[in-house]
Amino acid sequence: MKVFYSDKYIFPLPDHHRFPLEKYRLLREQLISENILSEVELIESKPAEKEQILLAHTPEYYTSFEKGTIDKSMIRMLGFPWSYELHLRSLASVGGAIRSAEEAMLNGVAGNLAGGTHHAFADHSEGYCVYNDFAVVSKFLLTNDSGKRIVIIDLDVHQGNGTAAILAGNENVFILDMFGKKNYPFKKISATIDVALDDGMEDDEYLEKLKINLAKIFRHDPSIVLYLAGVDGLKEDTLGRLSLTKEGLLERDRIIFSECRKKNISVSIGLGGGYSKPISHTVDAYCGTYKAAKEILA
Image (cartoon, rainbow, N blue to C red; front, top):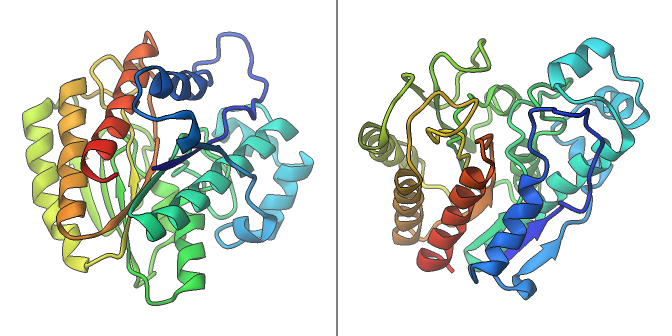
């Protein structure tokens, strides 16, 4: 199983910033130490090309972010200070998502130890997201084979407003988005199937909703699933507002991967959110996703 990583691209953050940048490195190290992945299965991502980013983003936005001329109000919406290192890291994250999707189409499953940047719009950044990885990947796959049908399963606890906006009206892309009803972003943008979750929801109710809506989205008969495997629904997460357990998230992953295997659908995995304290809860849950993928798909 090939898995791509970009944690060697780091960018400066102010002291005590709430975004846990170290989680990506910690995840890669723990996947190796727990023998879930071997060193040879991990491949360093190459930055996406400008032309690839422009499949989903405007030239004006790309140039302003690359050169640091982006409007200060947009930087406030992003939540990160601008730096050229952030631009490079964002390109590498999207590059890993593209490579993961290509590999999944060839061999059934692959992953990217980054991504889930579903709040980025075509012309602006929001919510820690600079370039929208799954929107770029979807456009990339369709450009190379217009007959593909893509399903995005977005299980980050925050609604994927940017992805829904960029891909709206695309007849070959279908999005299942399960998100916190009262959580960020406060202006939601409808996807193919929207499942709004109440604060404090626990495993059993969550998994039942997943099973029902998974059956609905798979009626579109996709050739590939882009799975945004966010773990910010954990009860320990500082931004999630749900009450899911690691065991519940592991069962979530097993349900999705088992259905994909049964239907012979390729799967490309992206991380999505995770902001627990301590961050080890987040990393453990991410590891669970890859453990389930190796058991069921690899």
